[in-house]
Length: 357
Image 1 (cartoon, one colour):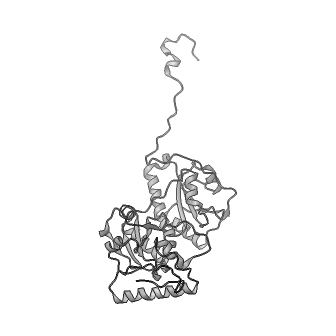
Image 2 (image 1 turned 180 degrees about the horizontal axis):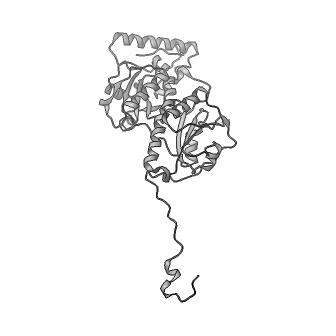
Image 3 (image 1 turned 90 degrees about the horizontal axis):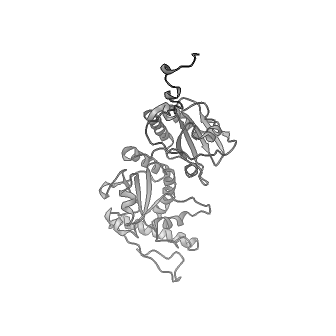
């Protein structure tokens, strides 16, 4: 298919052909109509819309929805035949792969939704990927792609091409997120909530760079108080409760109570452990969970944040995060005080010749 020159006839601009990977008359007609529509739109806007066709799927699709607003780094994986196995087959996460073409109008409509969904799915156990099927013909042929966009779902864990299934869900960001998380529940391995071990982890998870991220901190009892089994039970409760706000701008971390004194003081985590607080670095506000540490109560706390039912307080200062050794997953070893005397230091009572007390 040779698309029209968006800058008008006689411009001398080289037209790049696109492969027609279908023999279905209706599909071919749709492709022609999309090409005509795109050409008319480009000519109406001075021919600027089609200058970036080809290359990656990201550049090809973004021309239809550009914005002067500065965007954060994309979370969408750009796939080629050389990195497909590493990013998809050897990825423990669930992966949804969109096969697209730069000239495809529906692909251009999908791309911003795909980008938004990928950002919301960050650290959820699911990833979204994009393939320019016109540049990666071998991949398109391998998966028998006949129309664009076509979305394939790869379950969590080590996979191969035979694991791919067709995605038939909605194409709005919220619908994509919902479907991806459902697949995580079915086959994926949700990422563990990390331990807060230093300022770098704090910056990586909580400083959104323009994205309004809410960081939720779980302060757990000392390992000598709970033991490894008790701590892991707390972590299971955390993980289950966090599902209430999956796909939203939440990040979760935990630390041992007493390990981050400045953070605990700033967020009012001074009434015993376990304790929970949510903190927005960008807004400089926090809120504290004041009920018992159960999955139901934690879910209510998290959903209360999203609905504005949780009252917030201004932080007095930015808390200092200390660098600590990560938990080794084992029970704690009680500290044994060193005995500073020896029985020999006092001699043998039977040999004493001194006076008694």
